[in-house]
Length: 253
Image (cartoon, rainbow, N blue to C red):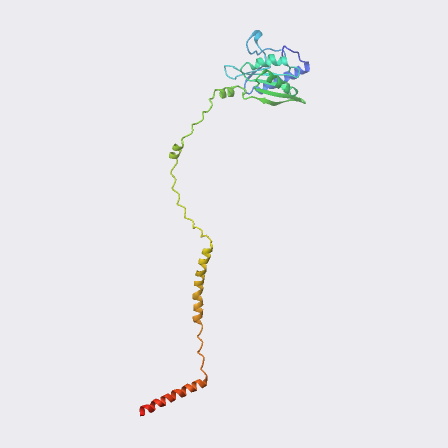
């Protein structure tokens, strides 16, 4: 329990109940020591007067038993400026993940204290009692994991260097030569439509029509010559006969 304040009995009982529930939760991964009520069995940060006693002390499960994190459970009465300045800041300075459990109604106040005092919190949880059960809700989580390995690994990992861009000549040499594309076929040029072209078309059309007209004329039969009148024919015959008789008489002489 914090030396700064004395909680009411009912609130202290709920506080110690939350501690035991969290002990069962973290026991899956860590060796967990608790300091419920007035007990001070698991100190951190030194010995004697300089030691602190958080509600839960998380240690690694190997033989070394190194400190892996601290957990502090607060009640509605213990979320104040003095508690944050003394205990929260001291727990955050241990260079291990600091987990903070608060009532749902005190979340905004705790966030303001952590921001104003620059207190790094690995995880901030809200808890509330629903009947006989206590439910936990994760409110805030930083990049630091439960055991702090991810945070250290990300800090030690160097930033990837940007690769230098290859020159264009190297890319061209590395790329396989593509076959040359076939030369495009020349597109026929459109003939300009002018008055001269129209005039040139007309004689050609007339020439095409002329043989047709000639063939039609050849196909038609020729008209018979007009007959001469009968009187003219008789006169002609008489003249021919007279001339022939005179010629005969001349021959006889």
